[in-house]
Image 1: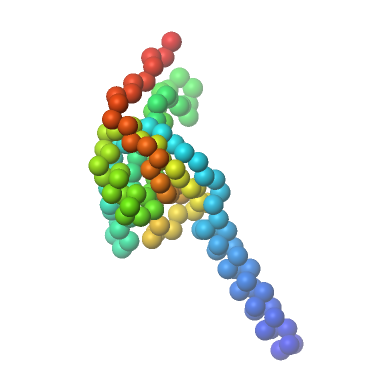
Image 2 (image 1 turned 45 degrees about the horizontal axis):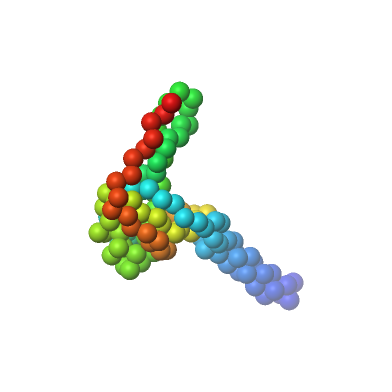
Length: 131
């Protein structure tokens, strides 16, 4: 019986480590989102992370007949990205991001983590009217 406790414990630890990695470090998707930077701030109780919201052109609606703007809430990966986004408030930006399955407090409050700022545009872009 004692011969099996060691290997079973090792297998259990490896499985738990793999599950932890999959839930918190596996990149589910990555891509680019574009829109107007609504806000960007550093906040948190124990871990101070950079959090922001991008308002995208167009509308979406969870309920038929209702209108709601597309919002992309994100966390920033580091101070180099944060430095660029701090100066881009209200401007049109394109952000490269990675989506994780679950957030981690020291990485940010969102599943979406911005890793790079592709473009910051000063031009005023407007939403086309709905016809």
